Image 1 (tube, helix red, strand yellow):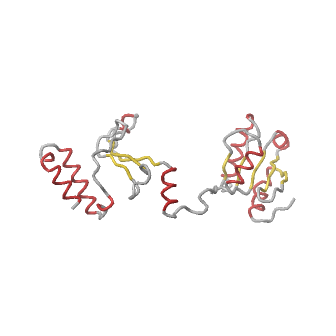
Image 2 (tube, one colour):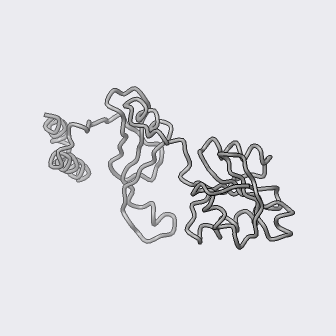
Image 3 (cartoon, one colour):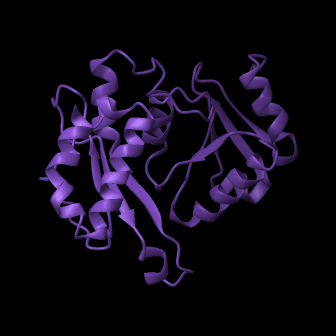
Length: 216
């Protein structure tokens, strides 16, 4: 019934405009994929970006309680417009807030959604230590450790609270003393224990904390 409504509405236009032949073909594909019950023709949709060249779309929860979860459309010229080879494509943008609200509404939000997938936080001691911290994070990633680096040079206590809130287990500090002595301080955010180790023993020391064998 839905597809028939769309076809009937645009049949006279489709005969004279090739654009609508493609448009109606799109809805035929939706029917073939058996997803037409989740799809509705909405002529009021207007996407604010002028690079769209075809069908545009938005995705909503069925009750319409929130604003659009995502929106996008077809753009044939965008890649070429920014210097690439011509490549027709379809894309969309999604906001994390709305999808989080929808997941929460239907009790599908993972219990650990607020936790970091990385158990290790490299802190930034001061403005001059950014590169040192980033280099340390890269070194640990090369050792197959999952690491995040704090994005600002703020008080260490604030960085520790950030890590604790995300469920991160280990915080690493590379201040002036550590940099001078080629060491790193490790803080177990679960127990508060802290120790300073040579850089060469860092990976094993981190693993000891994650394995629960750390003692100070």
